[in-house]
Length: 250
Length: 258
Image (cartoon, rainbow over all chains, first blue to last red; front, side, top):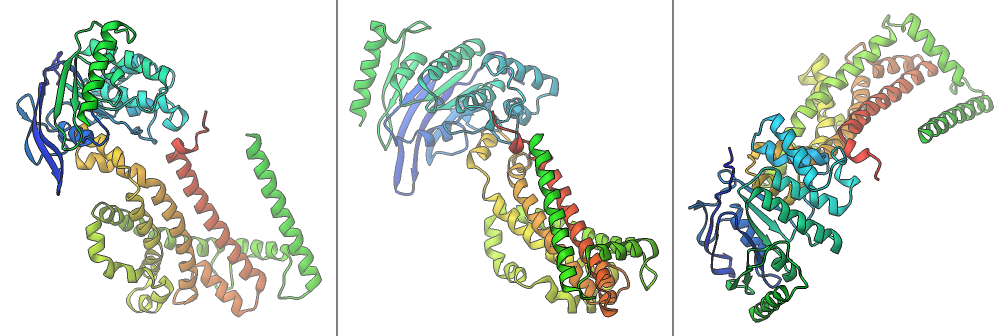
């Protein structure tokens, strides 16, 4: 069902409006297969609209959002999504939640079991398989959601400020974990964040969006090796460049 | 489990207290129309072992009522849940048919008894009346429950490529289930209310309501009270069964937090 290496190449050239409100005006960028990009922009730059278009659940008013040359479609493309808000199902246990994506895709039961066990181990939820979401902390719930997104081994993984609700140490831990999983699995990741340090820490390339109507104001490749040191001179230099761009974007 | 034992002890204590107060009150009033608890027990034993004046046993009466309630209530669930889900998922369907559906909600099932006597007989008459009583509480709470589905949960399904049917089964129904169960418990109460009224209206020879009317005509108060207590007890037990089902279905809510 899935190729061992993701082929999801993303190609966006879209405008979107809600009535008179223009959200995106000729938003144009592409993402290479297996690339990790972070999208930063001022609040209200229409990132949710962009992610919905990338997930194929919203069709742009004009233009296109293509994955591997065809319009994004969640039934056809293998896409996963980590939401900003809590999204675990309260009536399912941790492992049942993690299995959700695989079950939708109709994966055989033994495969589901081994993949779920594997990813639960990676995100550090071993021993909590049979707990219900209300019995674990907010940070653990978010890890369940991340595990659910990665369990399907989707070609394209969309992440919408997934760590915004986590405290600093957990956030740093999860950033390292996501990079780890990404290096293991090599997927295309599009990660939206308001935190530039996080973007520079994670991404191969950072895209900076302007305020509405949003367009790309800058694309900065991050040529640093992982693991990156946020205190190093190169890191701070790139970060201040991003800060400048984001400032100008307002 | 200590808390569970304590709850049982408190309930036993309040039950015994109620019986003592009853006994003392009956002694104070000293009237044949105010029987003491032991007279009720005597009447129960008599009815249970020898049957009533018309030759029907207590079990026949009880079972007749239970059967009617179960059939009518079952029909109520079978129609109310799918219709509630359908109209909850397609609010326009509900908005466009409200004027037809809603007025029926305010016609009490008891008001249907005269028509039911004309159009139906036997089990179908009671099933129809109880269906009317059980339908609306279940329908309304299902309908309201669908609105509680979190958009984010629906979205989790959609982004993973789930079909509408998958979302119905794995997102909508689990969310609405607590409301459906709550509606069922209210509906069960209405069903019991309706059955007794319908049986009092006559036309049949069995049922707890019928038995009570027979004894009321003979002014045998203890026997009437046996019927009343049985109705309370059976309704209580049915409700407990629903609560057990709820507890099992909603383990995820009942489990103690860390």
